[in-house]
Length: 96
Image (cartoon, rainbow, N blue to C red):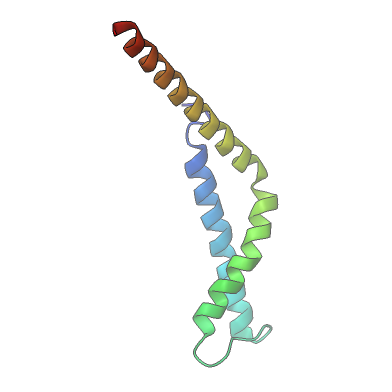
């Protein structure tokens, strides 16, 4: 299989990995008291939201190549679908 055949799956897995790493880091920082744990019972929500905010720019920078490969894969798929649709429409026009 080519390296682009699973680009979407690879990007999604890597994005989830970056988020999981940030989640662990934020949870450890909150547990040690370096960052606030939240207000009252909001600790899990606070940790998850902070991990999302931290992981978004990291994945934007770190996963640029994977995102471009995924984009190429999607564009190729859309182009093939357009070609099949065009071929099917021309066949229908020739019958009538």
